[in-house]
Image 1 (spheres, one colour):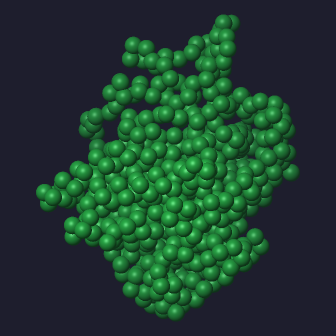
Image 2: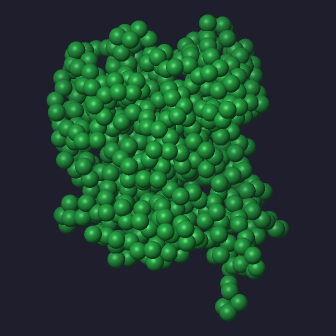
Image 3: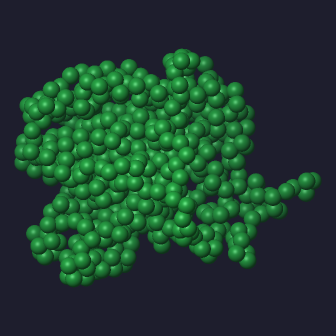
Length: 99
Length: 507
């Protein structure tokens, strides 16, 4: 039976780039266990002979006409940015000091 | 004489014969919003997150000028509409019910919104929803829940509770919703209104902020089947900006609804899904469902029971596929290009800013589903969860194919219960997820579905809904059967179900 520990939830939160507080971890871990337990019922329902479906419509390589259409201007693209500088997104430092 | 209770089809007629103007209608609905949406006692309907009175009146004035010149753009030109806050609107805030997008004003219109504007429908505002459409009650909105106009202590369904409540409370004649696992149909059922989830790919998803892109579909939220059909005719059709958009000509859904309204169902074969009944299904909901089936028989339909054995696994498959897609879709909220940015003390790195922002900007349910999706997609679990869920998806599509080989439409109650009390299931995710039991299979297989009001449950006097599902591309069938049922009920009840809703206090 799938059991998801507090430590595992903390690890997943790191992978998902969410800082979870101790209180949130305490709250979330048991809830996720209940959900996982409920969805675990699908294990073994479909055999190896059943192909997976990722999409309701089987479509591949849909292209539009190769013509120029107007896109967003730089101002429009930057209009929602938390910080911008000289027509670019301004972001915090990407690398740590040791890097 | 037009009023807030007029259907969109009646408003179309009144605009055409000159007995009203778009400015008059738009003002009428803005006044209604002002009267019932936010009230001093804090018990307003709260269907709207943003009301654009000025913009809507300006669009209405332009519509009236066009009409005076004989340049009407289409039947719905001048009829006001509300739009779920998950569709981008140029110049109007779009929050998706989340703090992470508070105050964001998109620089572009979703295709659905662009089509509404091009057709001359004044946009009254943006409607409330569960954060990023994750929920069945609208309680997961970061801006507070919407209340059900039938009982202000109850949920209006979700995620599109705002759109459903807006039409149920006569704040808008029409609204747009989106349906990923039932978010148009289930709110329709619990508010006594009509909601349609089109065939996947039938309505463009461009500018629809994705929850689970293989399941999301925008569609009409209205008080009548004909109004839904007219709106669907307007927003549907191929869009080169959505690579999953279906490239084909669609029949007129308006005509299908009109044909259905004659009430003749002879020659129509209806399948009752045996798996969508039993334990957990409210007796009053099942009683109304059986009456609807009996009405269809009376109208000449042939009814048989159909088993769709894999449907019992639909909920589990959905709650693996949806979080998996959502966790990846919501990765774009990284505090860099738009939305909230929370900067922790010191000299934080981009990753630290991202983590702090996503903690502050996302609510509980969003965090739950992102973590769940991250788990389902992680190596070691991928095959057991996500891979298995995708196979179940195949089995569900096969169940639909087999069923539609022998029947024209499938039917079930739209939701297992009527509207529950606000707060009742808020911290019990699995109990909340069970609301989507009957609506989810259609999303997994991409088939169209409608919910039509079919009465009030005896236990609580609250509305229930009747769901009609059709094969992919056969959306006209849900309009035909939906309109037939609606017409038979209107005759039986002497008017629409909403006539029986208790009035809101201002009335």
